[in-house]
Amino acid sequence: MLVGALALTLTLGLSAPVYSAETTTVQPVAAKAKKKKKHRRGGKVRAAWPRSKKAKAPKNQLARWLAKQVGPAPRKKKRSRRALASDSTTALSSAGGGKLWLIRSFEIPTSDSASNRLANYSWTYDNALATFAFIGVGLRSGAEQLLDQLQALQRTDGSLEFAFDTKSGDAAPYYRSGALAWVGMAAAAYRRKYDNDRYAKLIGGVIKYLLSLRNSGGLIRGGPDVGWVSTQHNLLAAGFLRDIADQMTSSKTLGGYSRSQLTTIHTTLSNAIVAKLLVVDSPTLAHFKQGVDDPQIPIDVQALGAMFLKLRGDARATSVANTIQAQFPVASRRVSGSSSYVSGYKPFTGTGVPDVIWSEGTIEAAVALDRLNITSPTATAAVTSIYATSIGSTTGPIGADREAVSPVWGEYHTWPTSAAASWLLIAADGGDLLLTR
Image (cartoon, rainbow, N blue to C red; front, side):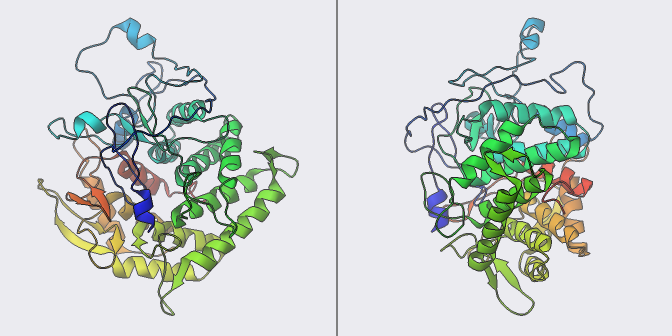
């Protein structure tokens, strides 16, 4: 079962979580893994607001909160001007280490027992998503700060760990194709938006590493140490390859591949996704299963899958959208421990799924419905209600409407999350750079 394979353990310092885009699982460490010896690219990371005194603060409140999530959690004691000045750039040695200018994934109340071990954790996916958000609000320096850091952290074989500690610089000793594909998509979005090849090495490395994970069936495995295949990872990889091939000239190569080669690989991958991972339930309903031999039905996979089919001109995109609208909605209710009310979508459909409204998946689904030109009052009301949880405060939107922990379905918390904030900004911008039309 794919979820079982995703319940990994890692070591970031003395204790650490595991987070999976499929299951949103945070688990304590069980054992140390062997350290990788591959060198990092290294390089400088240019400062953005609020680290840079020259940069202007974004006008958008959510964008300001997201920008303040970059780097280690603020210290209680004031730092000297000299210490602040030394943070203007970060150069990584081949061994890595030291503070990282990446997005902290959560804003956890200090009263919560998880604060000490998770406050400085940053999942690679969250940084890619925030890059899209910053580009959307015109905060180019914010996008560059994250991409600079990701490029510096990238291993010379193109790999990139799926989680980091922004305070210590430690990294999860695992590599996952989904996180890499998100980084590739974010760098490709920057390249398209600004017509700039600044992150060519980052993009080329991601291409090379992702394609090294292809199996005999044409799909991309979850990572170098596993045999399982995630639908989400492959949808993201297909979107990345399609976008970057569309930007290339016939004489250009990235990661050792030409435009025509990447186009051919994209076609093979996309056909395999449809053949092996799409399930047609009826003339009007269809869904993507979570992975090969994994029948679970996640909301985020349906959202990405619907957009993927739309790009292919496949009419079954509407059938997947119908499944989102028919099987995932949760009516408005009060957020646990709060006076706020939210509506939205649950993370999975089926028997025994968590009874939670998942902000990230809800907004992602709304973006997908909008991309398919489907008017959904339910989705609109849900996104509005989630956004309202951050209005008039200095925090971001909630990650879920209540707490839920399951070894099968994952872990959900009411903490403000960078992913929810990023998806709100992407939705407000129309999401045009995400899985480009």
